[in-house]
Length: 484
Image (cartoon, rainbow, N blue to C red):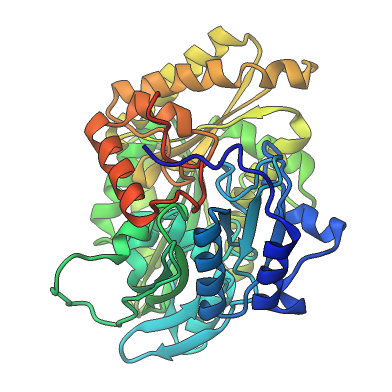
């Protein structure tokens, strides 16, 4: 059984002074107001208090911190941009945990355009990595709404998804090498830029998606892709989710694999965006129930990509799949379409309480899931407003449910567990996952035993004991207690 640090007393002044000496004055967050952003999660579901917030500037400083904390049995909460949605990087209110922010470690260590790789510190902002790649006519394919603030270390620790999974895969598929500090302070370096390296276990994959429970990622070698020469983006009103999935199949086949994003949304989300996000307007002029935002990208095809998209939509209209559509005629129009999609989470906030689900089912099961989950939620809370949107191209739906108009926010959010259970039971019956891209963290930790293979959980616990025998790394996150 893993040791528990839940009831450990806060570390004393002498120990904290030792940590301060490791990082120096610039590596300490002392201001109460500044500390608040490190102690609260993105959704406001988890609020805590750190014993101290450290911002090391190097891998060696991280190693010294972890060695000290491991020797003293003090818990460490690794933190990137703190944009996570499951409470995985938020300290508890006990005040006995060290928050370890990688934000000062933000160097781009090297870029090899001929090898299509970029080497970075874990604290690099995702958007900055994208810009560095674009400067040498390359693309870093990981893209998500929080890319202006999230950090690559956090992206890898949570195995982030985003809009391009359909074409390029999850975060773990963008990585060639990692640098990781282990719980005892040792530094593991697999920072090679090779696509073929068959020299034993692929250790980097153990840490990707582990949410900081096995080690602290401090650096990465990432894959780059050729920058697209032609891009075509369209918003399509579809007759139903089933029509959207049929259109997806045609898009993948007709484009020869050049469909890079395929997003599905219900009209309610767009209504929220138009109501609460400035300078947004309906591109189609009249409402429909369901929409697809699809993007295609390829090399220089002499304009053939746009012709392919136009032909795809013409046939979709003929067959009753598409009801209306617009194709972006400029980069400004493309950005306007994507702004609608990227604003959906923010636009839900003014509508009151929202119960969230980040689920995945087989792509073919998306229409059935949407209907069954809607019926279940409306039966549980009459008048609730289902807000379903997400990455239909890879089967990941953000099935959010807003409170009924005029309802009590706290009373509605008190049904979080009941609604999660109803939706997750449907997901499980379809062979799906209760966490598609957000991770487990604290929010879903106790649900995991009900939906994940028992042998898999036993192996996860065994790995945790092997990598972190004193249980200092992100305790209470991801790994369920043995009693569960």
